[in-house]
Length: 164
Image (cartoon, rainbow, N blue to C red):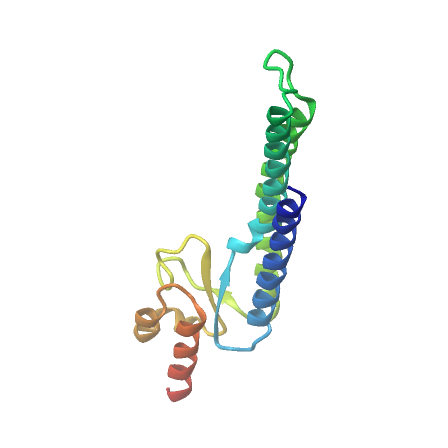
């Protein structure tokens, strides 16, 4: 039980740190086009929520295995976990907005501007293309290459722009 909780917490911290480092490297890469992926901004609150959910689940399993579960009397730890999950949900909404704005501001400070949503990465809800020159947002070849905003596509775009 404690090993699963520890793995959940450490995984969330690890993935958020990896996401933060990759985003920071993108912003400071001085490439003409970068993609900001906002999905990772949910990781801290989501990881904490998973940890709380794991605790509540482990508690319920323990109570049932030891025959201490009383359906007439609510369990305090499970109730506290429910409140903590609500706090995590609110934290998720607040932290996503805060972190997204933080990364947007960092990109702007490095001279990037977001492409209009009707140009590049049209179907992505969690990724935005940022450019140093706005005309790249309307480049048809870039639009054909950039579908998901992954590293392979970005490398292909950077190679295309070097040839141009």
